[in-house]
Amino acid sequence: MFNTTDRQQTSFSNHHPSSSTDLESSQKQVEADKKAIEELIRERDILNKNLIKAVQSTEKQQNLVKLLEQDKKTLEHEISGYRLEAQKQRKIIQQLEKERDRYINETSNLIQKMRSVSTNA
Image (tube, rainbow, N blue to C red):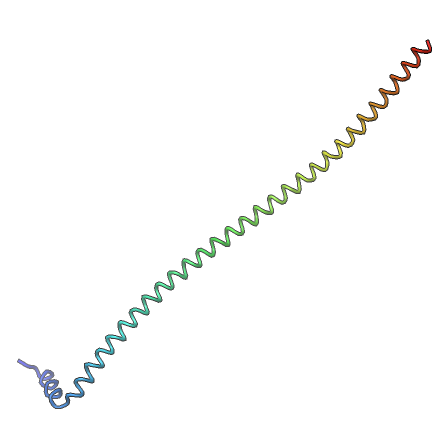
């Protein structure tokens, strides 16, 4: 029934009880170490996944910042164009106001001349 190895272990265990305890203790330690290694591997995998998520999130934020900076440049360019256009329109308005004032003066002068001619005649 017992094979030779089992008999030797039984015989060894009977003759060396402390060795059997040491063997069991070592086996328990090996199992505990395996569990610790598995737990560390799981933790590493979780940390790697979190790192990947963080990197992806950072890339998205960087892309968003780039888009916003581009939008800012575009808007600044548009504002600059509007300022130039407003400046041109102010000059046109000033010229038109000067022209209006000149026509008012000319009209006023002509009215005075007509009155003076009609009172003299």
